[in-house]
Image (cartoon, rainbow over all chains, first blue to last red; front, side, top):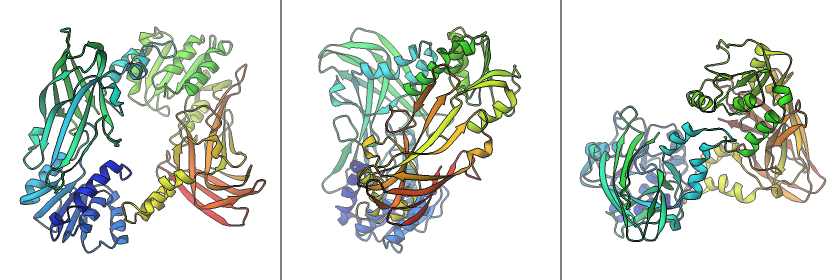
Length: 303
Length: 303
């Protein structure tokens, strides 16, 4: 993750270039991992940083902050935020890299919102404080052939029961911008200063207008992140038009091919909610109507 | 895995092209997964095939064998071979795709050997029946810089404690043949018809003779598989000279760079054993002496 330069570079810009926000302030780093964001905050002049993580990686983080002489400025806590007894009870700033694939898959956002409600001072800042999700439709014949239709004939055998499973599993992969055949449509905006946990289950309508005559084999989703509270707004996108990130994009194959002509629209609704049994998993459903009035609903599972 | 055409194609050649070995015979498929090898055996004329797997994938395998009309020829059993009550007690042939990274990492070979001792008729066949492991030394400056030395300076911070961990973790990746700077050396041969579980812990000497003047940054390991009992011996290699497989090769970085001139040798010993706490993990140690008489020992962990 540290090697994702878009990700880590954006956090560095947002934190280190905004020392006026950090100077003398207390900072909570939710899910601190190796401690890189905590060290950015310390470098930006924070009076004290508390990093919390339930993973064993925090043992390495402790060695790292000592090797970099931040032992007095950064305190690391191993455990769950929900249960932890933090050495500081109110913070000026919360920083966190909580985003998962499709923004919300295995995401820590609910923990960040909890941290905000419990530990952030009124008018405190959250880094980042804004996230938006988008979808578009893509032409993807060759890859769909390889990923989905492959199962129709595996060395002469019928593996179509696996095809059904493969179709319902969103695929995390990079997609060429030239595969995108419609305008993008924003399906969700999350303002981290006000969002509630319930907002992470949502239903959103979309209209995708074709920019050329082509065939559609899948919907494509991605997200943008921004640090609205920074002086020169730092933002990055994980879309097909932007530089590679480890989040790539998320592909939802449709059961059949959709024909679109320039100017025509695919309309529909996307619903997304944590799975009831395992709340790190996501149940996503996409209902859509094609320009030729074909209607379909697909249930996807990110497990 | 099914998409690895070297792997699946080799098994198909070995089984389907050797119908004279399978016709009217009973076959046990150890770790049958989706059932592809069981279906190859059925297609080759086996009188009955029993496939066993402890994973839930076997529920899909049942649908697949029914969709392909092998319900009467193939019986699937969900469970551990050690505990299972199989419908046939003695088999003419055992087939299995048990190989892991570095051949033995997370491998099922011990289960295959157990199956042989318990269920294989005298003079029965095992597909495959031979495996060999090789090492060579490689020039890998650029990649070592990115994978290992990266940790010396992460956005201006010292992450060298992670570097130590990264160095001890063998890297599974494809390596260009032109990076190989020595002749290969076989470090282990496994004859599946006679091997015992104890043979999977081993110590092997090696001598790697440089084929040109260059620098060495890592040792490289791979394995070859062969079906010795087939008419026209089917074999495949996972080495850097061969076609891509999902096993790729395994890279063991050395703590310092070794200088070699054409004709000079690096000598050493490799030891390999299952980890005592988790026997699917591997502890690997490589001791070596360079042409300039520098000696070193590195402990690696495949976890």
